[in-house]
Length: 258
Ligand SMILES: NC(=O)NCCC[C@H](N)C(=O)O
Image 1 (tube, rainbow, N blue to C red):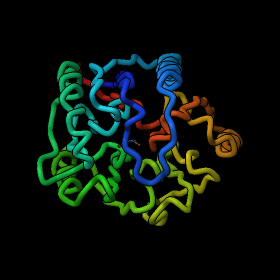
Image 2 (spheres, helix red, strand yellow; image 1 turned 180 degrees about the horizontal axis):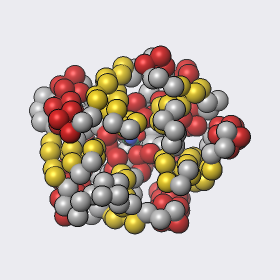
Image 3 (tube, rainbow, N blue to C red; image 1 turned 90 degrees about the vertical axis):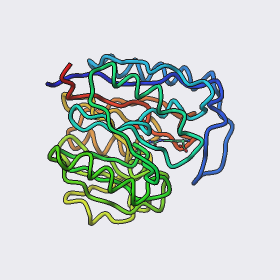
Image 4 (cartoon, protein in one colour; image 1 turned 60 degrees about the vertical axis):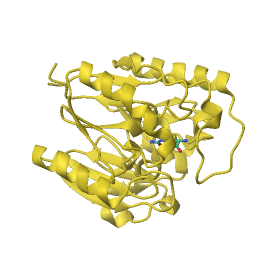
């Protein structure tokens, strides 16, 4: 059944200690990050999403990046096993949240690792990035979990950025967008549009043709508006300092049965 709920998780007071892998560490203003997070949540709500706050995980600096802990396909929630061991304690609260929403729950098991940021769904195609956080066993376990439900799982190499969705996301019409210097194999996607900024590669589909994007990609916002998309922007500068993007701050639940 169509639903419009989104999981979010309040930033930890320890946010500034979050992991950085591909970029130089910059000082994070936690107070500003909380304001930016509240504006992000307000933008989801303004576009009809009921936001559900997962119990905060104050001891986990990266817990605000809730997308990495669970992947939804239909009513099934696949609880991940994050590639960074430091993030594994984040999954317990998310598991509780999806179970209480009536999802069927499944898990990635050792030796598999998977970060939700490595999973891009385009219709029934589920692209899984095999990179620094998601391993081959993780990809196989996504296949085992979702292919019986009708998904087609396509593995994609990721070597230039943290996650697959740091490199590419998809527009409402299914076109995959990415900033070419950060995409390993653009030819793996049937329809690919190159965008001029790295953070322009990240869109959250709000519904009704609207796209949520980071304010740091004005040229991409212009390009997408010019192609007839309705762009809404939020400033997430403090999360970008930790390799976060608009996609990783929420998990949209669009097919709940409850
Ligand atoms: N899906 C995402 O893009 N997640 C961002 C995670 C950033 C966090 N600092 C990490 O390295 O795990």
